[in-house]
Amino acid sequence: MVYIESWDEFVDRSVQLFRADPDSTRYVMKYRHCDGKLVLKVTDNREGEFLVVTGMLVEFRSKHPHLKTLKA
Amino acid sequence: MVLLQLDPFLNELTSMFEHSTTKRSVWVTLKRSSLKSKVQRNKITTAGEGIDYRCLIRATDGKKTISASVGPKDHQRFQASYATILKAHMTALKKRGRKDKKKAAEGVKKPDDPKKIKTSV
Image (tube, rainbow over all chains, first blue to last red; front, side):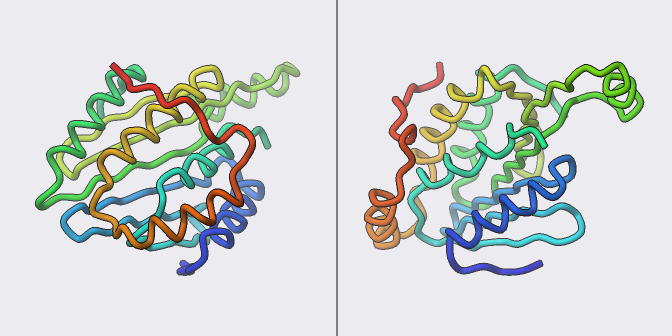
């Protein structure tokens, strides 16, 4: 599991993971209000990467789930 | 695991966020799925038809789990409502970070990004 610090890199790698195996790639988001943290994780059960966010504009996320409706 | 229609799912998700401010976390998972078993999928592909995929969305607060299935037609509407919910509830993230990202967002915005935000009823 790779921790990534840049959003763009996170998106690129997530798209790569998804295209390689669309049926087992999933995108997980965990939000903890009390800690002020948001963790985004993309994994295909073999490898994955995650991004911890403490202050991110949420509109970015609308870019991301679009890849879920892509056909292989 | 409760499978809901789209609007009830969004309402439940909102209440999960509202009830999880002091202690718990909210987990949301998105995954592509055809909602059919492998056997059914193989049958469909051998028959030469295309498989319809949907986006399976699960949300939990540790105690309760809800899920919904979004198809390509509902996707735009779901995205708009989902974005509204996230923006309204993720207020604990630092403000300073938002300002920097906002400048980056203005440069990187996709043409269909400024969606009309509809609140789900």
